[in-house]
Image (tube, rainbow, N blue to C red; front, top):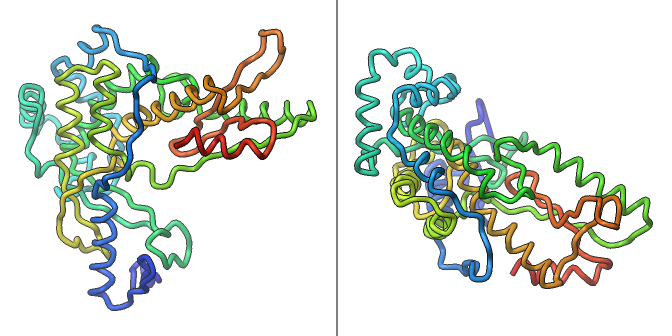
Length: 343
């Protein structure tokens, strides 16, 4: 229950309804501490899956020294009026005061380049809770937004600008979100054409839309690092990414007050410039698993246009960070096949 300016006075966490402020604070903090702990769950077997790999020139471009010109370009592409993290400085401060602070900032970048690390305190962040709807009462009715320090955000922005240049070379064309040169709207139009073609052709059968629950929150760091190696990323780049995602500490803001910092062992942060691109890399495994299932006959391809081969063949479509669209077969009985493919 919210009062005033989004103040939380009562909240449901699991089966419990908490109303005492001490209980509310502890309940919210414990929820996120458990959420960001890595459970020992099954991980997909990548054996037999083929992935695109970076060329040596791409690796060298990712791992090159940081120039002031590149850092300034990253800084200018940041939104200056976003809420600051624990350091209290918005990106507008860095933009306005760059002539004064540039030597210190470039020293941080040079150290990061040489040693693959920076002070862990730079990677501390707050999580602010924003209600998804009016009258939010359950912890799941709130969206968590990461408020990171300006120095880390600038480092992540520069790395993200490098990473997005190579994504089109390693990410399947089925994925259109967060990949440079591709548009989410294109996939929506193709999905609409698929549905329209089935209706006009009088063909029956289910079409599935799959939704991943809290996708960023459940990314396993070891799995991501292993995948980067398979895709040909170099050792220096992997060391940089490993440090960026694993050196974090966080504190939950409840009614504007931090609840104390704790360590996480999994997750990609909403609001981190790197997160969308790293998430797309992780989801490439899902895309390859679906293609593998179709090649094995568990799922079916979808033919648009001329059956003789001049039309478009669609296997599945990824048009957001957590939503997928694919053909499941000719009857509702094929739904168990989808379940088998996902397992």
